Length: 210
Image (cartoon, rainbow, N blue to C red; front, side, top):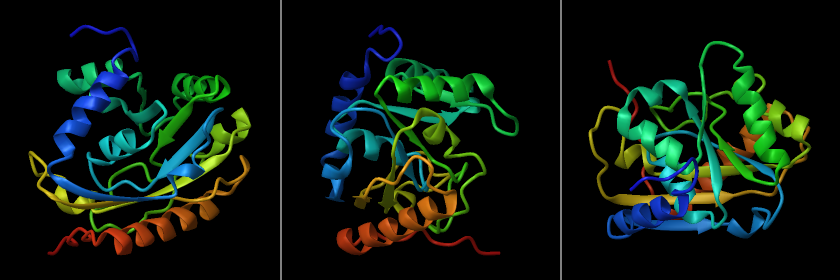
């Protein structure tokens, strides 16, 4: 299938949903808190490559996901990012082009999802949010919607080639103002992650040893 940038999002979401449906028991809370229209920045904890499919299949609106630029080295992931209209960011430096692209999406009334920790958590705890992660919301004047994910790191931890079955949870909190501090957003995401885990019965990833 050949799609222009972003044109295959709905097709991809349907395919991913069909693949996930028999494998996972998924419990969701608060999806109605995601604005039905207008721009908003979705901020979520990051445990697994399964985080994006979980959000994408549960949020009804189209979501522009922000991922690291290095994923484009994989031909399949490069195609997925292009097909779904994703934005990639180069780590370790101020990526002005990516920042401008995210702000443009938000000002155009779209949902953009980011993982402010910057990398996947190995033990399920929520790391500190990177400085400047919420700058785009302030510049675009859109609310910040915290999302807590649970179980994804247990069923598809880093290093495992394919995900296994299990229980997953997703909880959405009340939108925060565009000028919300990162620590406030992080606290909200952490609380939501714990709530989603308790509600779904999802397991926390095993901590690294040695």
